Image (cartoon, rainbow, N blue to C red):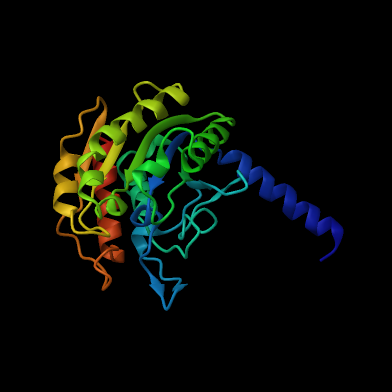
Length: 252
């Protein structure tokens, strides 16, 4: 390819990117069921993308290098430290676009990391700092921060005390996020877990249901099909979570 052709392609690519700067920005945070473990075969991403997760120029993703690019699964490929697959992000974005065509270009900010506890998301910890920094970078080009989508808690089911203190820790987390992003009414949509690393999933679920915050909506993953590891959602279940998140967000 000669230099002139290459420069032409590069300029056109930049123009397209400029035209598709996100207007509605969403944070995707939590652990593995948000990052996505569906569609992984023998430890590798299997490249199976269902129609509900199809890419679109109207859905952008902030890469680890803080560059907007057309979003596609796996959304957390360069964010999570483990192999990522399909999570709820793409089905969420497609569902929101279908139901609210005036929302504009959607910008997804993947921040989830598998196997992480709520204590690792405290203000001042690396995961928290990275999420805040990535979100601020996403907002530099304009656009509006529309919601935090949160799916986490499985790692806090191994110790009863951790499950029982989750409410207080999560409420503090949300207060800190809203303050640091200067978004005091930021909508939060939280997924109530259906599985966990330990024996206290029931206690975790009960504790999560007692969380009391303004502009918080919860969706329940109970009853959704799990993979053979009895921890991670299947592709079909991740799609359903995405749709539930979309319906909950559109109620704000």
